[in-house]
Length: 398
Image 1 (cartoon, helix red, strand yellow):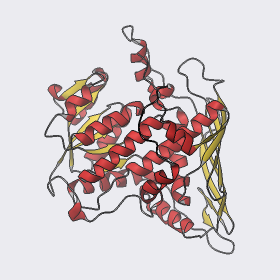
Image 2 (cartoon, one colour):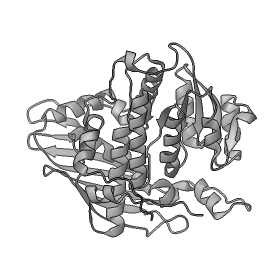
Image 3 (spheres, one colour):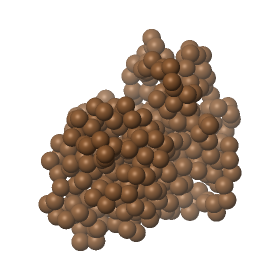
Image 4 (tube, one colour):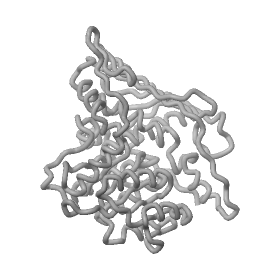
């Protein structure tokens, strides 16, 4: 753990600066199109992918499917991990950059307009900051950090992106689902009265494993299996459960003030250091409280639930928004939300749609998950403002 000397940011100032993105009615911040610095209208966006594992290839395909993106460069810690994506996206070997600093060579390419950040979350703040400094538009997968230091760095770079009118997308696709946008607006307008309690669960099984090559160092192995290591992924509440927890911030228009948690590592003992079960109680400023329970145990119960109970009705992920004597307002599934999110990103970059910069809300929701993890590790109540001001940092192993 390393302390840094950035000026402290109080929760009051933090909330003031992030309210628009964290609780706005739409999925993105809107500016006038003429204000946007973008690639030439109707041109093809030249995209670089930093982190070419499964998610990088998946997001890359979604972007290419907009018919306005061409992948022109790749970077990854492992050279072998770029072989299939290079064939898939027709990227020449001399434009594939390996190693811990390979992304810097990609960012130096003048013909790269935008980058997709899909390496392990630990690297996201540094890579995002460098991309914005290089004048690139960025689509950054969630989560965007693993600690308070990273959340602050990402948010600060996001503010610089706004100054430069560089588009910033984030991988929280729920916010791009039209049905959920409607529900969020109704709840914030008082459709269920005052929100009282919330309930969230995300139960899953164990994850993938890959054989360890004989030449791998311990750091090589941990980067390849980054999901299992707290320094690289932030733990599973940060890496995966951000999808659940972000919805509560969005729907209620609030951010928590504290978290109390518990959890442990009792089943998955053969790899990594992250928990396999966790439970967190989040307290919000107006009396609203949220319980979140998560597991990664195989075999085990599988499923995800979200509920908000208010004084005049409730929201249930499966039933929709329910008020006494009225028909439920449902939102359906999210079959197209990822593609819709990519389309908005592309339109913003090209100046063909509203400017978007999602850096604020993805930073606050990432930090909410970090807060819950720290509460569970400490088995204690942890305040948002104190953890934020601590600016603590998790270091990568040597």
